[in-house]
Image (cartoon, rainbow, N blue to C red; front, side, top):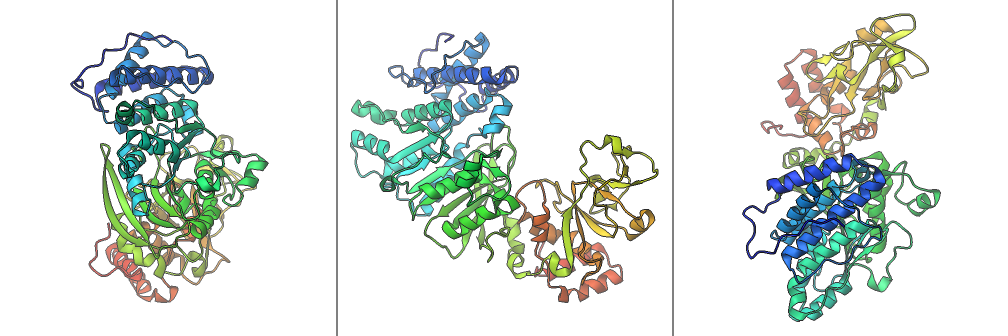
Length: 601
C-alpha cells in the first residue's frame, strides 16, 4: 500500500472541519475524476485503496493506540497517485474531529466517489444523509420500537449511517452502566448486512468508533456486527427466535434482471420489471417479527407505479404504513443522484386507522418536518395510493377519496403515443410527402399556449412516414408524459384541435405523450370539458398526490379522481359563454370541493 506519512493526532480540531470544507470538496472531486478514467475492475481496487487510506488516517487521528480492522476483502490494494494519497489522508484525519455520523457520511461519500459512475448506478450505492438516518430512528420510536430490548437489522447498511442513531438509542436504553455488558448486548442485538465488502468494512469501523468510549473503559474490543451478506439470497435467513423487531434501511434502487428462480422467490411482489428496493422490502417483511417494524427510505414510485401494484397489495395486507414522510428535494439528498424519496414505517400485525403524513425539507443537511395530516389507503390496495405529499396538498385531500369518478366513467381511455421517437431519423422529414402524416412531439403541447405544430425545436422531424404504428384519427387530449416536480405544472395538457385531424386525416403521436380519447368515438362528457379539468390547477395538484416519478403514466391518469359527471352543468355554461380562465379555474376547484376563496398554490 502506498501511503504518505499520516499526520500526528492533535488535541484540537483543525481550524475548519465541516463537510463543506474545501479540502473535503476538492478531495472528493479529484477522486471522482480519477474514477472516471479507469476501467471497472481496476476501479474497485482503487476505491478500496482510497477507503483504506482514509480510514487508516481517521483512526490514527482519532486514537493512535487503535488501528482499523483488517479489510474485509482479500484482493491486494493498489498504489494510488501521491496527490490522491495526500487528499485521502487529510480527509480521513479531519473526519476524526467531526461527529461520528458526519464522519460516516463523509467517508461514505469519499468511497462511493472513487467508484465508477456505472458501478454506483448498477448497485445503487448512494448513502443516507445523517439527518434522514436520525429521522428514521425517530419514526421507529414513534411506531413503538423498544430500544432496550429490540433486535435491529439493516440489510443494506452501506457506511452504517442508519445503524448509528439506532446504536445511540440502544446504548442509552440499556438498563446497565457496565460497558462490557453494553458491548455484549450490542453484539447480540444489532446487525448490519451489505454485499459490498468495502462498505461493510467502513460500517464496522464507524460502529467501532462510536463504541470507542465504551471499549476504552472496559478494555474489551467491540464485537463485529457487520456481515458481508446478500440480503436477497434465500439463504440469508434468521432463526425465528432471533428475528428482528426492527428493520431499518435505505436499500439500493434500480432495475434488475432476475433469474427464473429469483422471479419465483419474489413472485408475491413482482409485476413486470423488478426494482431492487421492492425486493428488499419483500425480504424485510419476511425477516421481521410478526409484530415488528420496517422503517425504509425508498423512492415514491412504489405508491403509484404500475410495476409496484402487487407490492402495494402485500404491504397493505401484511404491514400497512403508520407514517410516511415525503422528502421535497430530489437534488442534494443523495450525492449525485436525483430521486423523489419517502420514509415509511411499515408495521406487521398492525392496522392503523390512518397514516400520519409529513413533508420533509432539507437544507444544508438539516431537516424541517411539517405535518400534512392523515391519509388512508384505497379500498383496492393495488390501485395507486392517493396521498397528499406536501402541506399545500392538504387543500385537495378530501377530493382524493370523495371524487369517485375516473376518466373511464366519463367515457374516455388513456394510452401512450405509439411512435418510438428514438431512431426515427430515416422516417422523418421537414416537408410533407406521399404517405407522410404530421408527427406530434411533447414540445407541441403547452397548457397555456395550447397546441403548436410544428414545435419550436424539431423543425426537421415534423412529418413522419407512417408504418404499422397505431395512428390517431380522432380528436383527443394530449398530455406530456415527462415532467419534473419542480416545474410549475406537472399536468401539461392541451386539446388536439378537431380541425387539425380533419385537415390531415391522421397523425402520429410520439411516445413521450399520453392520449386521452373517447372509448368508442363518443363520450358522456364533451372533450372540451375534460381538457378544462385536466388544465386546471386543482387537477395538477391532485396529480402530484398520485405521481411518484418524473414519468406520468397512463395508469396514473386513469386513476386521477374526477368530479361526478352529473355536476358539470355550471362548467358547461361558463365554457359556452367563453368565460375567463380565472372563472373556469374557480369552478373546477368548486367541483372538487375547494371552498371559494381558498388559494390554489
